[in-house]
Image (cartoon, rainbow, N blue to C red; front, side, top):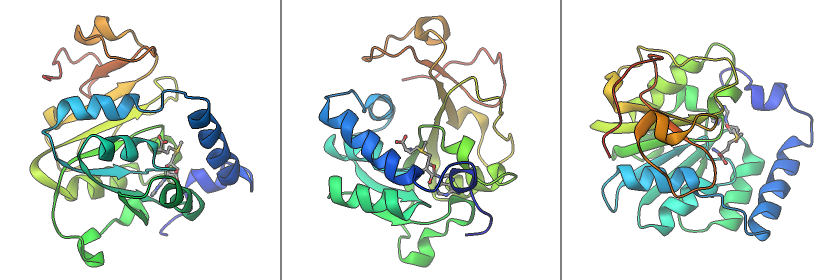
Amino acid sequence: MSRPIRWSTDTGPDHSRWYVDRFRQLAAEGADLGGEARLLDAMVAPGSRILDAGCGTGRVGATLAARGHTVLGVDADPVLIDAARADHPGPRWLVADLATLDLPASGIAEPFDAAVVAGNVMAFVAPGTERDVLTRIAAHLRPDGIVVVGFGADRGYALAASCGMPRRRWASVTTSQPTKANTGLTLPTPTAWGVQPALTPGNPQRIQL
Ligand SMILES: C[S@@+](CC[C@H](N)C(=O)[O-])C[C@H]1O[C@@H](n2cnc3c(N)ncnc32)[C@H](O)[C@@H]1O
């Protein structure tokens, strides 16, 4: 690990365990944990290779795998990766730091069609590594691959602009803006979603689904 991630430094010692239990409980209660996965599924071809970057307990990657995609989940937290392996056999789950990600060095050479960075991953990376994380994710995609980044819009951070991919291939998904106002889309989830190209607030470009 290059630098300690905020997920470790800004949370308590039992946080990972608590997080695993929380998502297991939500799943047991029948909560809808697949919204981001459904969105990505609508954006990619059937049977795509998808990198779940910062996969946590695997809720997004597992839903994508159930929809027929080939998923590799990567997370720095071994407690969460253990939970993903236990709860969602099928996809491959790896412990690794996204800031220095080098999957070919682990024998995974084939590029991905898309990457999903869901659930505030970018708010929990090590300070100052945001650009490295996005650059290393982009480095594992095929030339016309896409990245979808999801986060709460009220966390006060912006994505770096130069990470080696054209802006049109980035999308951000936020949870505090009405969907229709941004995209004209109504997504199949009770949550209010906004979908917009990242990096340039106010950019009138729209995601073409
Ligand atoms: C709020 S959790 C989201 C987990 C999952 N994406 C989800 O939405 O259910 C944030 C995750 O980002 C991971 N993370 C943060 N920085 C990372 C890094 N540099 N490399 C790999 N994982 C990282 C943490 O370990 C944690 O699992």
